[in-house]
Structures are given as structure tokens and as C-alpha cells.
Length: 258
Image 1: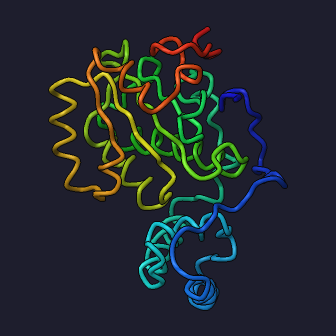
Image 2: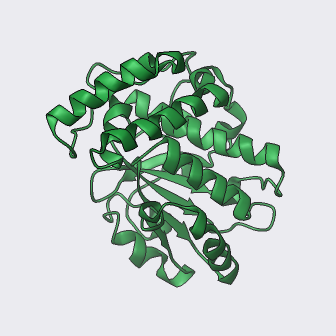
């Protein structure tokens, strides 16, 4: 699977003809028909026509087929998209971030989802600066949105936050982690299958305890943390050896290690 760094950066993302809408797993056909009709009726001023069927299904499933709950969530996200400049994301320049090869896809997890790797040793810390945090989170959002539109992510992805070899110049505090996870859980529902953070220490665990109360319990359940000694064994429960990079104890060659 090509890394994000190897993919072109066109002015608009091209949705492949083979891209399939995720299979809806919640609610009845009648509920979904009501949901779709209400979307069009209520949110024309929020550019609901730009909300693809892919996202509609994901929001509907996240809210277990509850029409009103899903509509409220989408209304919030449509307002966020307008203020966030979501529709301008394809035109933004992240060439500097891409050249660092700090965030890219490599391999599949056991459920067949692509694995997004964040190499913190190649990352420059925000040092808590709000503007820098926003830029970092925006790059992650851009990467995931681009992968969805291009068909790399067909429903979910596993997110690996690799802190191996990182120092104080690379590491982040609670502000970025909380902002990132909250942005994803609210506005990119159900896209994260697992989020694995490693290796951890007392500071990371303390930060996580502070962050958890602000996060949805379903998102909290997706987060896996492991110490240096547990990295390989933990990752092998999520990713098969032939899909896991050699640096983590697997057998797959990661071109981004070169």
C-alpha cells in the first residue's frame, strides 16, 4: 500500500469509481429513509449536499440508527466543516509535513483496515502553542480525509502513535492529544478502529487519565497503550506479522524506514 507521502496532492481529491459506501449496520431502511429526508429538509443552509453518502452512513451507524441523535451530530459537524474550512482541505499545502515522512499508511490490521503510522521521532513538538497544535491536528485530519476520499480507508483505520526514539523535542502534551481525539471522534465518526500509543511511561498514563473524562467512552475503549517491552506482542494481537513493519517485530518491509 502506498504511503501518503507517495500520493499526489491534486487540487481536488478524486473519488474512485470503485469506492463503495460502507454497509449500514444499524437501524431500519425506513429509519434511514427518514434520516436522509430530514437531512435535506433541515440543513440546506449548511451545505448538506456536500455530505457524501459515505459520511451519512457513518454518522447514522455511530448513533445506532437513532435518527434525531444522528441529525444533531451531523448539524454540529456541518457547522464545524464550514468554520474549519473542510472543503478547502484538498487545496492546502502540507508538503513540508509529507517530506518528513512522519505520518503515513503501512500495512493492514487483522480486520483488513489500513494502518496509519505517526512517527513521533520525526515530529516537531508544538510545545503547547495553540496555532501549532491546530496545524498538526489539521494535517492528521487532512491525511485521513484524503485517504477516505481516495479509497484507502473504506470504513475504518488503525492509528499507531509510535513514540520510539522520540525526545522532548518531539513529544506532545495533553492539549494536542485531547484536541486530536476529540476532533476525530466528533467529526469523523467510527473511522478509528484502534488507536495504539507506544511505548508509554508514567507521564503518558497520567496525561491519559486527565484526557479520558473529556472523551466518548466508545473512543476511550479503542485506545491501547503499551510499554516498550509489550510493543511487539501487543501489536501482533492487532496486526499480522506479515503486515507489521520489521521495526515493530514483524516481517513487513516499510519503505519509509529507508
